[in-house]
Length: 542
Ligand code: FSO
Ligand code: SF4
Image 1 (cartoon, rainbow, N blue to C red):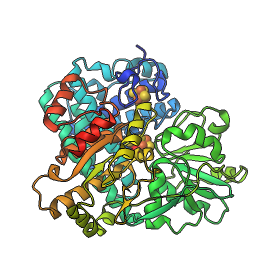
Image 2 (image 1 turned 120 degrees about the horizontal axis):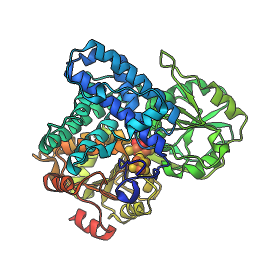
Image 3 (image 1 turned 135 degrees about the horizontal axis):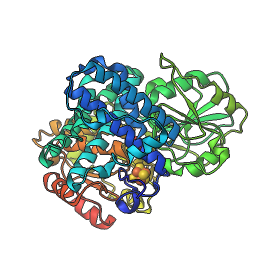
Image 4 (image 1 turned 30 degrees about the horizontal axis):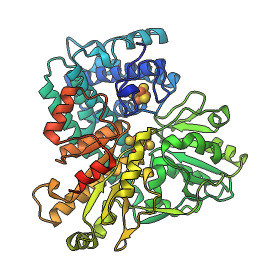
């Protein structure tokens, strides 16, 4: 076996990618990511054992978040970039080691590597399979994946100037715990829930950062057609990158289109003032292979999900920034003030044709907590009168698997007195179906990006209060969630922490759940997989 990774939903045979990732990640990148993660665990041990004051480790904290983000599915395929990050983190680790007093340190806190070869050799002994016991491995990895998702959201918030030392301190605590052989399975289960608790914190932090800086999302019609100007496409989740791009393109004659998870940017008041922010181009991440060809202009990846491009022509138009990276694609770094220079991309756009139209019309979104709560009276009346029978939270991710057609079919066949609450790229499975509305409330309410699943939790908690219920599970809400990568893991753990039960998770249960750990999730939280559309409709409507 040359590599082992089972962190995402598309993992080979739902067991693990062992030769090459289904995502396109090769053995070398997989191993370097394993070693980067191991280095972060070493740093975490030093921070915990040395009782470091985390709030004073700003430089380290930011790099830890970025490193974790670089190991998330489809974020960074660039071996050179990851190697450089390993070296940077080892240097930071060694600085920390000199300033804390701790004995008997774990290998992760002290190992050294010189060459790429020695990195790969070391990586082979520190990856996922280095934990022999299947259940312990499963719990450790679930924590690591939750922490990766948490780091991604924390990094976005940080870029807006919002940090929570409690979240960073927890990241160190959790990562250190994954190398602590004295912890029992029960203690690791408790750590998993604590991960969910901090997941809620980080999503609230990011929500506050986004709304504080860009205003509260409001109901918005987003154009899905094109204009005849040259254009740049921006993908991923980082709204500060979008802001900088819009500032730099305004008045240049170059249009900007959002892609994938950047779609919800249109819902924020702050972005409405840019008349060159034209609309959203294309669909969810995995359709980029065709849609980037027809877009014809430069594409900026601010985060995942990158699919390895098929042609040199497309690769030459892809730029990355932040934690994202792809070999051969130009990476744009921030200067010490966080400023990014997109001039090369904008100049390239001017030499290229305008996007080819692939769709026309518009879609509606912007139903984050503030907007939905502004409509609360209407929503509550509709529930009381029976006009709305049930809500279906169908947040999460989209993916390539054919089995995900289930979600389109499920949405299509839901009775007309039901409403879908969505967030994340999962929405692309049904956001262009004409599902109509109930008394002026659209039947698909899009709150935003995957992190805006937080909004859905806020809405549920508010409804619980309005209806005077003791238990969030007494609400007429069913959860049929689709997952793909590690941000979905933190969203799931956050929902479990909030007490949400009976979540249906698909299209497959995570391959990283051992049979025993899966059993615990079923017994404790009522987690279930999906069945046929027909059976699940019957079950969830009951
Ligand atoms: Fe999707 Fe990709 Fe947002 Fe993920 S574009 S899959 S869960 O990165 O982060 O929803
Ligand atoms: Fe396989 Fe997913 Fe890991 Fe890629 S991220 S190697 S597809 S498990």
